[in-house]
Length: 482
Image (tube, rainbow, N blue to C red; front, side, top):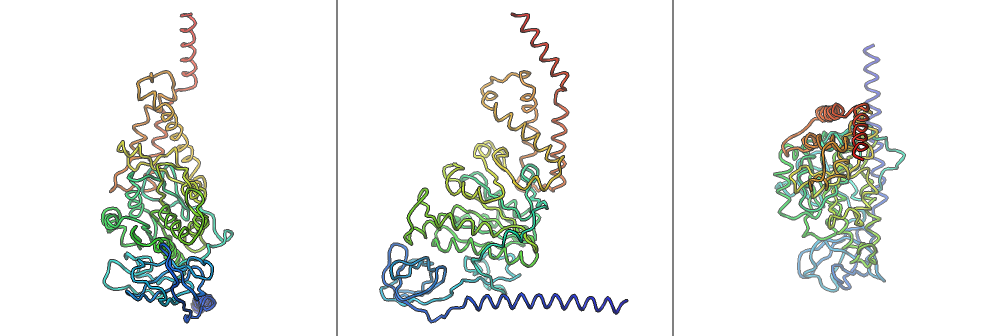
């Protein structure tokens, strides 16, 4: 028996080795197919706004090139289109020192990123260069920055809960492994703090964070205050600040996604946090307009709305590992129906709306439960929990409808039993939904508190008989008065 078991182990080990070798060969074949000659060169014809027009450079869209500036160090850029007989290049830096006739050469037809297990704990830029260490970690693998999402038919259903450690999300808007949620918020309502809490408390193997178009001051604040050592040790942070060129900001979003895909393919459950999709869209708008695209909805060219699903659809649940995507959307003018918000909401599997009114009242996290939804929740939790959540949402909706009457003092207790219950339960509901920054709540604790809240509400409900008797007495008094 021992010989048979030993042979079985050897056979399974050989099969794994063969599969690994087959995948490696297939990867090498794909790389060979994309190889283009590096002797492709051209010369600068002119500059127009933020872009270079290069003649004699037959490089494909998305390729990276390098300009040998006469008045400075080499300047890299990305091919974003063609105009007449010229190739349009969006540079990764300022155009200072560029002269007519400067040589431009092809660097990479299909840009790749160096990745490896040692990236965990690092802060990198859009090209994978480490920013917070003096040495580059060992990264033996390469991944494409841009590739097609996996086919829809190869994706398993989302059927496992992903606890985030935040009661309002786990209890009322339950998220699953591989789900994509949007966090919609205006400026200054606690979006970065909420993302930091998710990074610290979410039950994920690896966390990849993309800070796209952030203020330079806020990067260290997020790393030290919001993320902390607990979250940082299992995270990779990709940074592209607002002062960097638009093409770098777009590339940073794809780099964060590519890194998440790398860890997912190793069998890890990955949490991808991106802040924010709006700044990614603004960067692409800048590139599109500079490349000659006509503006469409609110100044956004068509390429923006074509690029959003290419980025967002790369997250999901897969046969080996998962990428749970949490994408923040900066709502312009607190209008949730502006073009980017409306488009992203239609692509994702749910949305979490942060309320400025709740934030100004000191209610944190400022999640507007009634304005938010998780489309996968019904597949993840029990029927009892769903019933409890529906009851709590009904009470919150009842209170919200009569909020103005309660505020001006026009509400009289006893006139509406459902409203009386909503008013009585509001402090308890708020206590469950509010949470401190350093406070983590387990999944079991969250479910227990939601259940206790619903049982308390049901125990206070008037019985049908008493409700009927009360309405009969009221009718008799009105008849006597008449």
